[in-house]
View 1 (cartoon, one colour):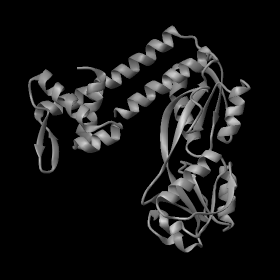
View 2: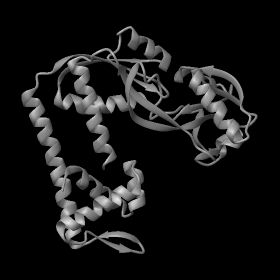
View 3: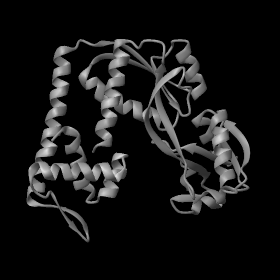
View 4: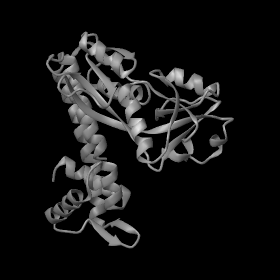
Length: 296
């Protein structure tokens, strides 16, 4: 029994379904099923009853469910206590973020990182991916959350999440009255505003072309605030990755489906430039955070 197996077990218990648990863990179903079988073999008893309504915990499964949560919580607290005792890590950390969901990811990481290393100070900068890459090259940033794709020969990066592409629509537009999603074909002929990064333009054009839809692109922007302003003034519909930020009163957002596409975020640093001790610790923290989040 190890921590990861316990995290997998908790995910299955909460979802009551192997397939849904595998999706939430961002893994395939066979290795997850294998982990659960190994746990049952280790304890010599069934942990789940397989029923028509899904997986239900057996009495022994209920015990493990309670203890697994306690064990993982204690492990997390122990890790933080040891780090606090053994480390006097401090100093500045400068992080760049693309607009959209990235600033909210970084803010969540900083909140947890500060619990372990309260002496670290932060400078956050925002901009388009190309701007952030330029600042990385000029050594003005320690790390940056950028949008994929990226140059893997020059940068070392880890995937930290993805967000669906959304349509930001003026409230007075007829498409604003649709449901929570909008089909890609419904955007044909509509004036579209898209991110200006060339790889994004190509990605969007390919997405439309693969589905027999012709995009009518009237504008490009690297700035989320510019996109909001243009949509608010009914200039057009903007295609932009989903953001956790508050929307505007004159704008509605709809996830684009049939088919959907996702924007991937990468936490990156320069490959041939050693990170500071603080930046290295932050990167390690994010790796642990992502692993723990994926295993819940």
